[in-house]
View 1: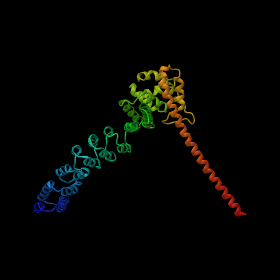
View 2: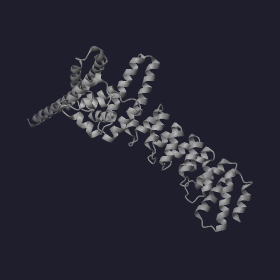
View 3: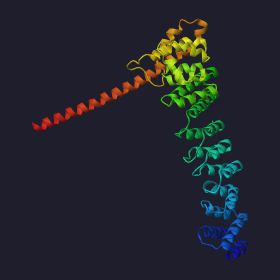
Amino acid sequence: MIVRRFLLWARTAPPGQRADAVSALARTFLYSELSQEDHWEAETALTAMLDDPAPLVRRALAEALANAPDAPRHIIVALANDQPDIAALVLARSPLLSTEDLVDCAALGDSFAQIAIALRVQVTPPVCAALAEIASADALIELVGNPGAEIPHSALARMLARHRDVADLREAMLARRDLPLEIRQSIAVAVADTLKLFVLERGWMNPARTERVVREAREKTTIALSDGVDSADVRGLVAHLRETGQLTPALILRAVLSHGLAFAEAAFSELADLPLARVAGLIQDRRGAGFPALYRKAGMPQALQPAFEAALSALREPARDGAAAGPQLSRRMIERVLSACTRLPADEAGKLLALLRRYESEAAREEAREMTLHLIDDAALDMALGHVEEGIARAIAYRSRLAA
Protein backbone atom coordinates (compact mmCIF):
# COMPACT_ATOMS: atom_id res chain seq x y z
CA MET A 1 0.00 0.00 0.00
CA ILE A 2 2.84 2.37 0.87
CA VAL A 3 4.52 1.68 -2.48
CA ARG A 4 1.31 2.46 -4.34
CA ARG A 5 1.07 5.77 -2.53
CA PHE A 6 4.72 6.43 -3.45
CA LEU A 7 3.96 5.97 -7.14
CA LEU A 8 0.98 8.30 -6.91
CA TRP A 9 3.05 10.89 -5.03
CA ALA A 10 5.94 10.64 -7.51
CA ARG A 11 3.74 11.90 -10.34
CA THR A 12 3.69 15.43 -8.94
CA ALA A 13 6.70 15.65 -6.59
CA PRO A 14 9.69 17.78 -7.69
CA PRO A 15 12.81 15.94 -9.03
CA GLY A 16 14.93 16.50 -5.91
CA GLN A 17 12.31 14.98 -3.64
CA ARG A 18 11.75 12.10 -6.04
CA ALA A 19 15.50 11.40 -6.05
CA ASP A 20 15.62 11.28 -2.24
CA ALA A 21 12.54 9.07 -2.14
CA VAL A 22 13.77 6.59 -4.75
CA SER A 23 17.10 6.30 -2.90
CA ALA A 24 15.25 5.53 0.33
CA LEU A 25 12.98 3.03 -1.43
CA ALA A 26 16.00 1.26 -2.96
CA ARG A 27 17.69 0.94 0.43
CA THR A 28 14.47 -0.39 1.91
CA PHE A 29 14.22 -2.94 -0.91
CA LEU A 30 17.80 -4.10 -0.33
CA TYR A 31 18.15 -4.09 3.42
CA SER A 32 14.68 -4.31 5.04
CA GLU A 33 12.62 -7.42 5.71
CA LEU A 34 9.62 -7.01 3.42
CA SER A 35 6.71 -9.31 2.82
CA GLN A 36 6.61 -11.03 -0.54
CA GLU A 37 3.91 -8.64 -1.75
CA ASP A 38 5.74 -5.53 -0.53
CA HIS A 39 8.98 -6.79 -2.06
CA TRP A 40 7.28 -7.25 -5.41
CA GLU A 41 5.62 -3.83 -5.23
CA ALA A 42 8.93 -2.16 -4.30
CA GLU A 43 10.69 -3.80 -7.24
CA THR A 44 7.85 -2.70 -9.52
CA ALA A 45 8.14 0.87 -8.26
CA LEU A 46 11.91 0.93 -8.76
CA THR A 47 11.46 -0.43 -12.26
CA ALA A 48 8.90 2.28 -12.99
CA MET A 49 11.39 4.95 -11.91
CA LEU A 50 13.62 3.95 -14.83
CA ASP A 51 11.24 6.01 -16.97
CA ASP A 52 11.49 9.09 -14.78
CA PRO A 53 12.31 12.04 -17.06
CA ALA A 54 14.70 13.59 -14.53
CA PRO A 55 18.30 12.29 -14.76
CA LEU A 56 18.71 13.23 -11.09
CA VAL A 57 16.20 10.56 -10.11
CA ARG A 58 17.72 7.83 -12.25
CA ARG A 59 21.19 8.74 -10.99
CA ALA A 60 19.98 8.36 -7.39
CA LEU A 61 18.62 4.93 -8.31
CA ALA A 62 21.97 3.95 -9.87
CA GLU A 63 23.95 5.14 -6.86
CA ALA A 64 21.73 3.16 -4.48
CA LEU A 65 21.88 -0.11 -6.47
CA ALA A 66 25.34 -0.03 -8.12
CA ASN A 67 27.22 -2.12 -5.54
CA ALA A 68 24.36 -4.39 -4.50
CA PRO A 69 24.54 -8.08 -5.47
CA ASP A 70 20.81 -8.39 -4.66
CA ALA A 71 19.65 -5.56 -6.90
CA PRO A 72 17.16 -6.48 -9.64
CA ARG A 73 19.31 -7.41 -12.61
CA HIS A 74 16.96 -5.94 -15.21
CA ILE A 75 17.19 -2.55 -13.48
CA ILE A 76 21.00 -2.70 -13.47
CA VAL A 77 21.09 -3.58 -17.18
CA ALA A 78 18.71 -0.73 -17.97
CA LEU A 79 20.80 1.74 -15.99
CA ALA A 80 23.95 0.49 -17.74
CA ASN A 81 22.38 1.66 -20.99
CA ASP A 82 21.23 5.04 -19.66
CA GLN A 83 22.99 8.34 -20.37
CA PRO A 84 26.78 8.23 -19.77
CA ASP A 85 27.02 9.73 -16.27
CA ILE A 86 24.31 7.38 -14.98
CA ALA A 87 25.52 4.30 -16.85
CA ALA A 88 29.07 4.79 -15.57
CA LEU A 89 27.94 4.27 -11.97
CA VAL A 90 26.79 0.70 -12.56
CA LEU A 91 29.29 -0.12 -15.31
CA ALA A 92 32.16 0.55 -12.92
CA ARG A 93 30.72 -1.15 -9.84
CA SER A 94 27.87 -3.59 -10.35
CA PRO A 95 28.70 -7.29 -9.78
CA LEU A 96 25.56 -8.29 -11.70
CA LEU A 97 26.80 -7.31 -15.15
CA SER A 98 28.06 -10.30 -17.10
CA THR A 99 30.94 -10.37 -19.55
CA GLU A 100 28.42 -10.22 -22.38
CA ASP A 101 26.72 -7.19 -20.82
CA LEU A 102 30.01 -5.36 -20.46
CA VAL A 103 31.17 -6.16 -23.98
CA ASP A 104 27.86 -4.93 -25.37
CA CYS A 105 27.98 -1.72 -23.33
CA ALA A 106 31.59 -1.10 -24.37
CA ALA A 107 30.61 -1.42 -28.02
CA LEU A 108 27.54 0.83 -27.77
CA GLY A 109 28.78 3.29 -25.15
CA ASP A 110 30.96 6.35 -25.47
CA SER A 111 34.42 6.91 -24.00
CA PHE A 112 32.90 7.72 -20.59
CA ALA A 113 31.22 4.31 -20.42
CA GLN A 114 34.36 2.56 -21.66
CA ILE A 115 36.46 4.25 -18.98
CA ALA A 116 33.99 3.09 -16.33
CA ILE A 117 34.30 -0.51 -17.53
CA ALA A 118 38.09 -0.23 -17.62
CA LEU A 119 38.11 0.86 -13.97
CA ARG A 120 36.20 -2.15 -12.60
CA VAL A 121 37.86 -4.05 -9.77
CA GLN A 122 38.18 -7.04 -12.09
CA VAL A 123 38.17 -6.91 -15.87
CA THR A 124 38.10 -10.33 -17.55
CA PRO A 125 40.19 -11.18 -20.64
CA PRO A 126 37.18 -11.10 -23.05
CA VAL A 127 36.20 -7.63 -21.83
CA CYS A 128 39.82 -6.46 -22.12
CA ALA A 129 39.98 -7.82 -25.66
CA ALA A 130 36.76 -6.02 -26.59
CA LEU A 131 38.03 -2.74 -25.17
CA ALA A 132 41.32 -3.16 -27.02
CA GLU A 133 39.39 -3.37 -30.28
CA ILE A 134 36.97 -0.47 -29.84
CA ALA A 135 37.78 1.71 -26.82
CA SER A 136 39.20 5.20 -26.87
CA ALA A 137 42.81 5.85 -25.95
CA ASP A 138 41.70 7.41 -22.64
CA ALA A 139 39.80 4.25 -21.71
CA LEU A 140 42.74 2.04 -22.64
CA ILE A 141 45.12 4.11 -20.51
CA GLU A 142 42.86 3.43 -17.52
CA LEU A 143 42.59 -0.25 -18.43
CA VAL A 144 46.35 -0.72 -18.73
CA GLY A 145 46.86 0.99 -15.38
CA ASN A 146 44.27 -1.20 -13.65
CA PRO A 147 45.97 -4.01 -11.66
CA GLY A 148 42.73 -5.99 -11.75
CA ALA A 149 42.62 -6.10 -15.54
CA GLU A 150 43.58 -9.50 -17.01
CA ILE A 151 44.81 -8.24 -20.37
CA PRO A 152 45.81 -10.88 -22.95
CA HIS A 153 49.04 -10.24 -24.82
CA SER A 154 47.11 -10.09 -28.08
CA ALA A 155 44.95 -7.30 -26.63
CA LEU A 156 48.04 -5.31 -25.64
CA ALA A 157 49.36 -5.65 -29.17
CA ARG A 158 46.02 -4.51 -30.58
CA MET A 159 45.95 -1.44 -28.31
CA LEU A 160 49.38 -0.43 -29.51
CA ALA A 161 48.46 -1.00 -33.15
CA ARG A 162 45.42 1.27 -32.82
CA HIS A 163 46.96 4.02 -30.70
CA ARG A 164 50.72 3.74 -31.21
CA ASP A 165 51.09 7.55 -31.40
CA VAL A 166 49.55 8.16 -27.96
CA ALA A 167 52.49 8.75 -25.64
CA ASP A 168 50.46 8.39 -22.43
CA LEU A 169 49.26 4.95 -23.48
CA ARG A 170 52.80 3.83 -24.33
CA GLU A 171 54.00 5.06 -20.94
CA ALA A 172 51.19 3.25 -19.13
CA MET A 173 51.98 0.03 -20.98
CA LEU A 174 55.67 0.23 -20.15
CA ALA A 175 54.77 0.53 -16.46
CA ARG A 176 53.18 -2.95 -16.49
CA ARG A 177 55.52 -5.62 -15.16
CA ASP A 178 53.85 -8.31 -17.25
CA LEU A 179 54.33 -6.46 -20.55
CA PRO A 180 55.76 -8.95 -23.09
CA LEU A 181 59.18 -8.24 -24.54
CA GLU A 182 57.81 -8.03 -28.08
CA ILE A 183 55.34 -5.33 -27.03
CA ARG A 184 58.15 -3.35 -25.41
CA GLN A 185 60.07 -3.60 -28.66
CA SER A 186 57.02 -2.46 -30.63
CA ILE A 187 56.75 0.57 -28.36
CA ALA A 188 60.41 1.35 -29.05
CA VAL A 189 59.67 1.15 -32.78
CA ALA A 190 56.70 3.50 -32.38
CA VAL A 191 58.84 6.03 -30.52
CA ALA A 192 61.56 5.75 -33.16
CA ASP A 193 59.05 6.32 -35.96
CA THR A 194 57.67 9.38 -34.17
CA LEU A 195 61.20 10.74 -33.81
CA LYS A 196 61.89 10.06 -37.49
CA LEU A 197 58.84 12.05 -38.58
CA PHE A 198 59.82 14.88 -36.24
CA VAL A 199 63.32 15.09 -37.74
CA LEU A 200 62.06 14.85 -41.33
CA GLU A 201 59.42 17.55 -40.83
CA ARG A 202 62.09 19.96 -39.64
CA GLY A 203 64.58 19.02 -42.33
CA TRP A 204 67.40 18.38 -39.89
CA MET A 205 68.67 15.38 -41.89
CA ASN A 206 67.99 14.01 -45.34
CA PRO A 207 65.53 11.08 -45.52
CA ALA A 208 68.15 8.41 -46.24
CA ARG A 209 70.37 9.36 -43.32
CA THR A 210 67.38 9.75 -41.00
CA GLU A 211 66.16 6.27 -41.92
CA ARG A 212 69.58 4.75 -41.26
CA VAL A 213 70.08 6.51 -37.92
CA VAL A 214 66.62 5.55 -36.69
CA ARG A 215 67.00 1.95 -37.88
CA GLU A 216 70.32 1.49 -36.12
CA ALA A 217 68.96 3.09 -32.93
CA ARG A 218 65.99 0.73 -33.10
CA GLU A 219 68.31 -2.25 -33.52
CA LYS A 220 70.43 -1.12 -30.58
CA THR A 221 67.34 -0.85 -28.40
CA THR A 222 66.12 -4.26 -29.51
CA ILE A 223 69.38 -5.93 -28.51
CA ALA A 224 69.39 -4.10 -25.18
CA LEU A 225 65.85 -5.31 -24.45
CA SER A 226 66.86 -8.92 -25.04
CA ASP A 227 69.79 -8.80 -22.65
CA GLY A 228 69.45 -10.82 -19.46
CA VAL A 229 65.90 -12.08 -20.02
CA ASP A 230 64.55 -15.63 -20.13
CA SER A 231 65.25 -17.65 -23.27
CA ALA A 232 61.51 -18.09 -23.84
CA ASP A 233 61.07 -14.31 -23.91
CA VAL A 234 63.96 -13.96 -26.35
CA ARG A 235 62.41 -16.57 -28.64
CA GLY A 236 59.09 -14.71 -28.49
CA LEU A 237 60.84 -11.47 -29.40
CA VAL A 238 62.69 -13.10 -32.29
CA ALA A 239 59.46 -14.61 -33.66
CA HIS A 240 57.83 -11.17 -33.47
CA LEU A 241 60.77 -9.57 -35.27
CA ARG A 242 60.60 -12.13 -38.04
CA GLU A 243 56.84 -11.71 -38.41
CA THR A 244 57.21 -7.93 -38.70
CA GLY A 245 60.17 -8.06 -41.09
CA GLN A 246 62.71 -6.74 -38.57
CA LEU A 247 64.86 -9.86 -38.15
CA THR A 248 67.57 -8.73 -40.57
CA PRO A 249 71.14 -10.05 -40.96
CA ALA A 250 72.43 -6.66 -39.77
CA LEU A 251 70.43 -6.96 -36.55
CA ILE A 252 71.71 -10.48 -35.88
CA LEU A 253 75.29 -9.37 -36.59
CA ARG A 254 74.89 -6.46 -34.16
CA ALA A 255 73.65 -8.93 -31.55
CA VAL A 256 76.76 -11.09 -31.93
CA LEU A 257 79.02 -8.03 -31.83
CA SER A 258 77.22 -6.92 -28.65
CA HIS A 259 77.70 -10.22 -26.77
CA GLY A 260 74.09 -11.12 -27.54
CA LEU A 261 74.69 -14.83 -27.93
CA ALA A 262 71.22 -15.80 -26.69
CA PHE A 263 69.59 -13.52 -29.25
CA ALA A 264 71.77 -14.88 -32.07
CA GLU A 265 71.01 -18.48 -31.11
CA ALA A 266 67.27 -17.76 -31.01
CA ALA A 267 67.48 -16.00 -34.38
CA PHE A 268 69.28 -18.87 -36.12
CA SER A 269 66.90 -21.36 -34.47
CA GLU A 270 63.93 -19.40 -35.83
CA LEU A 271 65.35 -18.97 -39.34
CA ALA A 272 66.73 -22.50 -39.71
CA ASP A 273 63.72 -24.12 -38.00
CA LEU A 274 65.99 -26.14 -35.70
CA PRO A 275 65.80 -26.81 -31.94
CA LEU A 276 67.46 -24.11 -29.88
CA ALA A 277 69.73 -26.58 -28.07
CA ARG A 278 71.10 -27.89 -31.35
CA VAL A 279 71.68 -24.40 -32.70
CA ALA A 280 73.45 -23.39 -29.48
CA GLY A 281 75.75 -26.38 -29.80
CA LEU A 282 76.66 -25.49 -33.39
CA ILE A 283 77.29 -21.83 -32.61
CA GLN A 284 79.31 -22.43 -29.45
CA ASP A 285 81.45 -25.21 -30.96
CA ARG A 286 84.99 -23.82 -30.84
CA ARG A 287 85.92 -25.68 -34.00
CA GLY A 288 83.12 -23.91 -35.87
CA ALA A 289 82.65 -26.96 -38.07
CA GLY A 290 78.86 -26.99 -38.10
CA PHE A 291 78.23 -23.28 -38.37
CA PRO A 292 78.52 -22.96 -42.19
CA ALA A 293 75.74 -25.52 -42.66
CA LEU A 294 73.58 -23.76 -40.06
CA TYR A 295 74.24 -20.43 -41.74
CA ARG A 296 73.13 -21.73 -45.13
CA LYS A 297 70.04 -23.42 -43.70
CA ALA A 298 69.03 -20.13 -42.09
CA GLY A 299 69.08 -18.48 -45.51
CA MET A 300 71.58 -15.82 -44.49
CA PRO A 301 73.50 -13.86 -47.17
CA GLN A 302 76.74 -15.55 -48.19
CA ALA A 303 78.63 -12.24 -48.26
CA LEU A 304 78.20 -11.84 -44.50
CA GLN A 305 79.35 -15.34 -43.54
CA PRO A 306 83.01 -14.38 -42.92
CA ALA A 307 81.85 -11.56 -40.66
CA PHE A 308 79.69 -13.90 -38.59
CA GLU A 309 82.40 -16.55 -38.36
CA ALA A 310 84.99 -14.00 -37.20
CA ALA A 311 82.57 -12.46 -34.69
CA LEU A 312 81.59 -15.82 -33.22
CA SER A 313 85.22 -16.88 -33.01
CA ALA A 314 85.99 -13.74 -31.00
CA LEU A 315 82.88 -14.25 -28.87
CA ARG A 316 83.95 -17.78 -27.91
CA GLU A 317 87.26 -16.51 -26.53
CA PRO A 318 87.48 -15.72 -22.79
CA ALA A 319 86.76 -12.08 -22.08
CA ARG A 320 89.77 -9.93 -21.29
CA ASP A 321 89.90 -7.91 -18.08
CA GLY A 322 88.15 -4.61 -18.64
CA ALA A 323 86.47 -5.79 -21.82
CA ALA A 324 82.99 -4.48 -22.43
CA ALA A 325 80.17 -6.76 -21.38
CA GLY A 326 76.46 -6.55 -21.77
CA PRO A 327 74.43 -5.28 -24.70
CA GLN A 328 76.96 -2.92 -26.23
CA LEU A 329 79.23 -3.26 -29.22
CA SER A 330 82.69 -4.70 -28.60
CA ARG A 331 85.57 -2.94 -30.36
CA ARG A 332 87.73 -6.04 -30.05
CA MET A 333 85.19 -8.15 -31.89
CA ILE A 334 84.58 -5.48 -34.52
CA GLU A 335 88.31 -5.27 -35.19
CA ARG A 336 88.42 -9.04 -35.70
CA VAL A 337 85.52 -8.86 -38.13
CA LEU A 338 87.04 -5.94 -40.02
CA SER A 339 90.27 -7.88 -40.39
CA ALA A 340 88.39 -10.89 -41.76
CA CYS A 341 86.34 -8.80 -44.19
CA THR A 342 89.19 -6.85 -45.74
CA ARG A 343 89.97 -9.92 -47.85
CA LEU A 344 86.51 -9.90 -49.44
CA PRO A 345 86.05 -8.59 -52.99
CA ALA A 346 85.42 -4.85 -53.07
CA ASP A 347 81.91 -5.23 -54.52
CA GLU A 348 80.91 -7.48 -51.60
CA ALA A 349 82.75 -5.67 -48.82
CA GLY A 350 81.72 -2.06 -49.48
CA LYS A 351 78.45 -1.80 -47.57
CA LEU A 352 79.57 -4.27 -44.91
CA LEU A 353 82.77 -2.36 -44.17
CA ALA A 354 80.82 0.90 -43.97
CA LEU A 355 78.43 -0.71 -41.48
CA LEU A 356 81.30 -2.10 -39.42
CA ARG A 357 83.05 1.28 -39.39
CA ARG A 358 79.88 2.87 -37.99
CA TYR A 359 79.71 0.12 -35.38
CA GLU A 360 83.37 0.73 -34.53
CA SER A 361 82.72 4.45 -34.09
CA GLU A 362 79.71 3.76 -31.89
CA ALA A 363 81.70 1.32 -29.75
CA ALA A 364 84.54 3.82 -29.37
CA ARG A 365 82.15 6.53 -28.22
CA GLU A 366 80.54 4.15 -25.71
CA GLU A 367 83.95 3.27 -24.31
CA ALA A 368 84.85 6.96 -24.10
CA ARG A 369 81.64 7.71 -22.19
CA GLU A 370 82.35 4.93 -19.70
CA MET A 371 85.96 6.03 -19.29
CA THR A 372 84.84 9.62 -18.73
CA LEU A 373 82.46 8.52 -15.99
CA HIS A 374 85.21 6.48 -14.33
CA LEU A 375 87.62 9.43 -14.48
CA ILE A 376 85.00 11.75 -12.98
CA ASP A 377 84.32 9.25 -10.20
CA ASP A 378 88.05 8.88 -9.49
CA ALA A 379 88.50 12.65 -9.43
CA ALA A 380 85.57 13.07 -7.03
CA LEU A 381 87.00 10.35 -4.77
CA ASP A 382 90.44 11.98 -4.77
CA MET A 383 88.91 15.33 -3.84
CA ALA A 384 86.89 13.76 -1.04
CA LEU A 385 89.94 11.94 0.34
CA GLY A 386 91.94 15.16 0.12
CA HIS A 387 89.37 17.00 2.20
CA VAL A 388 89.36 14.17 4.75
CA GLU A 389 93.16 14.17 5.03
CA GLU A 390 93.19 17.96 5.35
CA GLY A 391 90.57 17.79 8.10
CA ILE A 392 92.53 15.14 9.99
CA ALA A 393 95.71 17.21 9.76
CA ARG A 394 93.93 20.28 11.11
CA ALA A 395 92.46 18.27 13.98
CA ILE A 396 95.89 16.89 14.92
CA ALA A 397 97.43 20.37 14.80
CA TYR A 398 94.63 21.77 16.95
CA ARG A 399 95.07 19.05 19.58
CA SER A 400 98.84 19.67 19.59
CA ARG A 401 98.28 23.37 20.30
CA LEU A 402 95.91 22.51 23.13
CA ALA A 403 98.43 20.07 24.66
CA ALA A 404 101.17 22.71 24.53
